[in-house]
Amino acid sequence: MNEDKEEITVENDFTIRKPVKKSSKIKWKIDIDEAVSYGFNTIGGIIKYVGIMILMVILISIFFRFSIEATLAGDDVLSDFFTFMAYISLVVLLLIYVSLSIGLLYKFGGDILLKAVETHNRFAYKLRQRERKEN
Image (spheres, rainbow, N blue to C red):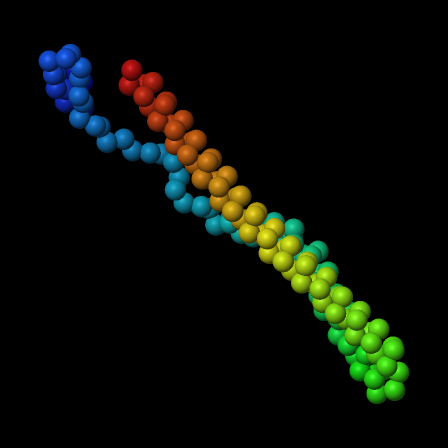
């Protein structure tokens, strides 16, 4: 009989063992350098979309300004054209914003899931190794 386990034999000839406390060597902390690197990589990936969004805001303000100047000059057709272009640009900006938000949520959710699966697999691997050593 193993010293760590307490065995009880029942009439049907199967053994019930008292569980042995097993400690894990898995690192449950995230390294700060890894986290900062992850943040920089994420920002580096979205910076082009943020730049496009900033340019769209500038373009929308220019279209609205031209629309106001055309209205003050008395040219209603040109004013309507610039107003229409401003609203089209606003819709494009909103689509980019929603797409970026969905993409970031997808990325973060996927990264969380992958990290959880990786940790689960490492934990299961360590447990299998420990069980092999005990047997």
